Length: 382
Image (tube, rainbow, N blue to C red; front, side, top):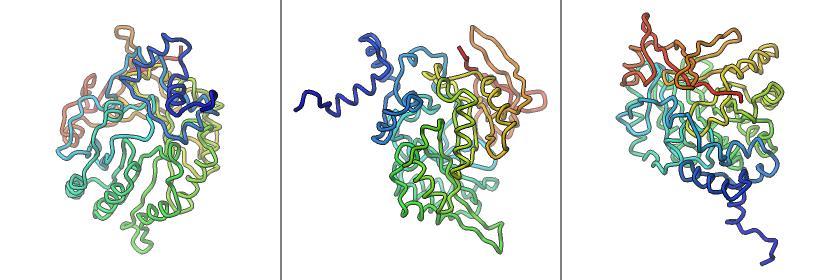
């Protein structure tokens, strides 16, 4: 073997320890990896060579070892559904998780407690049970197929889509996926044609129409590589709507220039800017979390641009998403050197308890007029 040749194992070690500058750094990163595993795809590896913004999203940092976060933000106090893989927190929609693993692990993923842990996916029998249960939910009209990564098992995904799309009460199906970035090669013409078949538009009776859309996830213009845009175009050309959910990340996209560039690029490539999410306070992600105010500063500028490029800016206490408007002000609470935002959500406490079949999450209470009020751990801009 040539002495300059790097084996796959050596290359992997070199990549994983990219941010280590000493043996002590290597030791710290190894401790991080024990708690928060590392995983990436061959396609991402090629992008790592060109983009620091992408590397920061997937490669471990020494900073992950010190954290003020929680293992389960947005899910504190959540009880498992009686059917594995099914959750219902809202009046009109359910969440279905056929697979709990991913082909690549984002360092800021708020589901660190459920991915990166070899949790089994749903069985076909459990999918059958989910379909029966959802069919009996009168107010539910939408299903979000989420993860982990739904496209990890395409046969299972299409089995689930067949079952859910056949239900009379389900007219809106969304798939949450980051495979457009991690594995764009899977979106062949055959795959896109099959996905598009779940769009069933009735021009004679539009109340009977059904649609399928994909919620994609791009955080930085560097992610819009030619292979990625080709996969996106294969989908949109087939009639699949793509809506992008961006996460605000410190040192990656937390500035006006990057965000405006990203959203303009998305629009030009037929991808709808949908959400700009504040990075949730999951443990090990403190170094990637800005203040919510930092996101508002960016959002206020976006509001002066064309409205087509303005996503919803939201942060998410465990009681439900909170939309930030250009005139929003924040009520801060300081407790033991942690800054919280105290906020009244749009969700009624009684309805939440009835639908979710659980009590309010920790750090949440009922207001005098019956709404959920909660505390959200803010980030910082240091």
